[in-house]
Length: 402
Image (cartoon, rainbow, N blue to C red; front, side):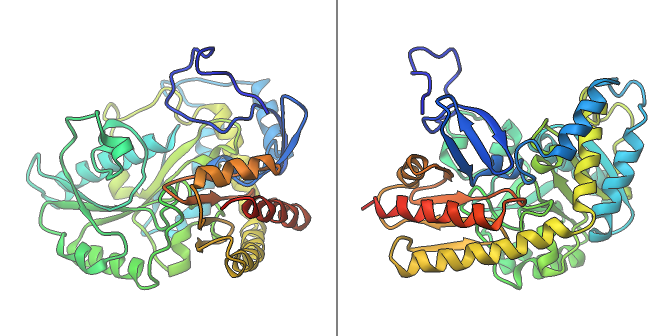
């Protein structure tokens, strides 16, 4: 394991990575610059849902690299409409109404796009007074780190030193549908939620919460925007996490896994009357929906369309849950939360960072979040043998703490 010292680097220090330098990856395995191999249980925060260098995704990228990589949106290209049609076909049946697709690049851009569309829809279609549009969000949220998005974060690390903040947001406790309903006044245009809060430690809401939120939005005539950038595209055992509760959002933001771990691809998918308020000149992106992105994302949709990866996430997630139950029983964890093949683990001693460092020494990659919590998000393609080996290594690492 090696990493550049703080004195040697020319990088701005906005990250504090674990002390390992990765040089190669294949499936669920990565290799560092000393030749040591690790099992990857982070999968790029779900950007690598299909593992490292999935053959179908790499082939799609290689083929497109030999043809055309960028046109800007000043011109059409032959993959843009097929990409929109394919993505609408995958997630459109899980949403309210007839879907449109608006491609962007990063997850934060998708969230910003959804906020802009919801506000403009509120003014033009709902009759909200100019300059008053409000979006209701949940405590503990993580939707990105742009100036607007950190304006409604309650994480001091994300907010401190970055004001003044953008107005127009109202925060209610996550999981409290009664508080959310009470917050829906005449200025509200949308509710923006993660169905499962990943950055917070894979926080799964009470069973009745999302259906109650959907009902409250319907009664108030406001939009439900689901941020499925981490939770979507198979991670929870469903194409969208909202499916677990039978809830159909009006808009959904997608990212991370949509680019297959090859390049950043994001999109907002949802009601045509909402996204239709964004007319030429009102929103855009030079790279959004570029040919290379569309080629890879089309291959991602092809991987997800049969439903086999979602089923694998459910099966492997159950296996993960059984192993985590044993770790709790052995006193190596104080508890955990799980949604499909995604879990937040709470350690009894030290910090989540210390636990991840111990796992690194055991040949497993994971990432800490707040306090004594760390997250596991293995590739959906991980084999039973690799998952079992990774969990055995993780358990051995946890035994060294305390």
